Figure: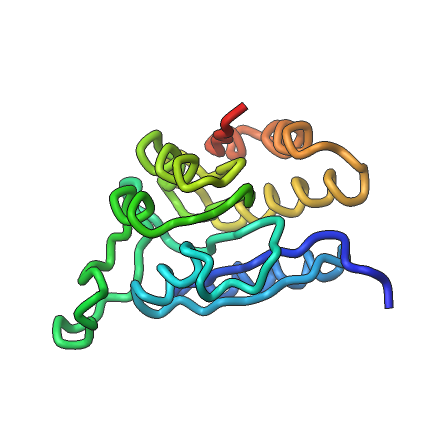
Length: 185
């Protein structure tokens, strides 16, 4: 068996399964090890973001979520379903990332709409991630998939560094220009 070149944690929220299946299939085709996490409630997301539930080490954390106004959308739960230590929200924004995330040098890519704003990106960088990539506005799901495929193709098959791979994927067409890349360097 060929050694895996990267390890990716793929966190998937409701109604994002098709994108995640397509992305996972492509990543595994490139010989990337993909570990899947299904997110059904805030504590599931907190477990991944805090590293408590992550198998480590990982190179990338890909967040397949719907987004809106700088917040990850989680399933809506009835108030009595939330546990005492769980934020009772379905819009998981920067304040929760700041509070719970501990992403030591992991590269984070969010695929959902409007997750690439300044507040959310800064919260991720403050959590310790080295790079945060996400669409700043609303984007077609097919464009997200094409962007991700080109990005990882450039890293693995063309041996490009992460920043160069981002720039190549970004320049595929005008839809890709919605993606933003934030880093500490």
